[in-house]
Image (cartoon, rainbow, N blue to C red; front, top):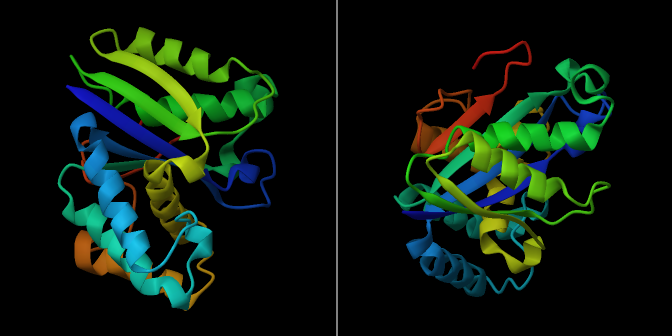
Length: 231
């Protein structure tokens, strides 16, 4: 079966500055490729309903657009073909010098690998799209693809490609959910509108606070990586 994965990040500065945030978050939307057009149509329709031409972004949430983002979150949870996974990296425990030869960018993509590797299943094909950024090492995405392919020999990673977020509604949805989880874990809920959306997720859909899950939780998976090893 063919799948697509759309990824975005929140709080990257915490990988190099432990004072910036408690956690860095990297999140991903997973769906069968056959539902790509439905994802695009549903989100485009919601944006059109509220007269939004720009990107969906957690940082843009305000009381004016609370109903827009409530519909976006409802759509995600009610669409059985969509899944979400986020990895949380505790900034206090990141040691770039020890684990990544002092290369923060290398460390970042190692965490990307951990996010993706455990959800690549046998006999599937995957196209992975990440929010486009300028890397010091231009070959980072090719390296990530190669490592994922080598570690998951019975699945096929067709590509790991950077896309501008304004061109991808999948990446925009990943931004909203990753921003939501990041705000919760970093204790930086900056408005009542954002608190309302976190409450929507916890009370209506999860029926509990957002917290780390096992890797087998399919719909809304929160992977808080243990830097000492293990799951």
